[in-house]
Image (tube, rainbow, N blue to C red):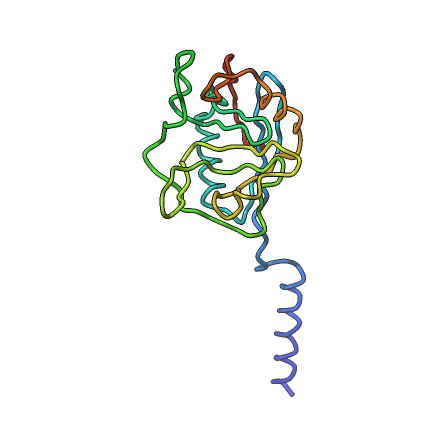
Length: 192
């Protein structure tokens, strides 16, 4: 009888612990970001399904790395690209897009994360592993997306507010290398 009473007590205790949420695992909180430009703000979130890209973007944003970098490649009907470290000090007309931070991020492809309008994705060089640039990213511009890039470039976030800002940047006058004639600087903040 004492054994049954003791087992009942343990069962009730375990049920109370489970129902109170103690010891239960919770999904990581979704990280939100804000990209500020002279054309307006773009707000969005980073996917928890791509933790290496998420954490790297957060680290660089919190360090202020992106502040003062340019959207250096803009193509209406395709995307806007930024994050080249060389763009902070680039002279007018200088070709950009080759700057890096000396490391790459392993690809984190996910069939559910697609190149829809507003998708935030990592730029990369032509490398067999499809590893991403440590800092350069692009944001998909067209309504129909750019799905030919799915599973080839890591999508790690989504712009949910300020989609019109993407259009404004994509339509900026540019040179033969798709660099805007007037610098479009950004600042990036993580919203806690």
